[in-house]
Length: 66
Image 1 (tube, one colour):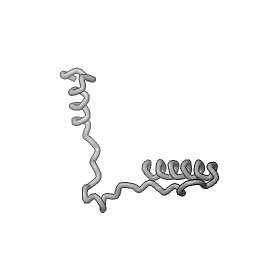
Image 2 (spheres, rainbow, N blue to C red):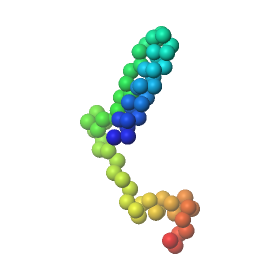
Image 3 (cartoon, rainbow, N blue to C red):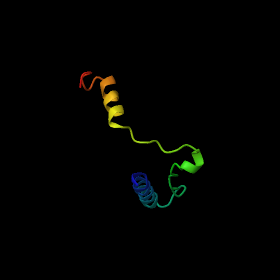
Image 4 (cartoon, rainbow, N blue to C red):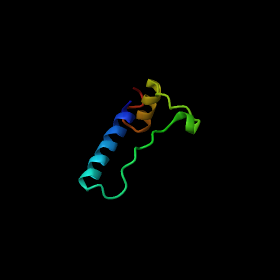
């Protein structure tokens, strides 16, 4: 959902800038969204709490005993 919103914001801003320039140059094209069907890879799953804690331990952001 966020990617759709950001895509629309980007397209509207690019279109507004294009209009203010007097329509010079090519008209802006929409940003293509990544598509699971095109890549053949499933969308990444969310990390579990244990995985996140381990990553934070590896970065030294939380103590090893916690």
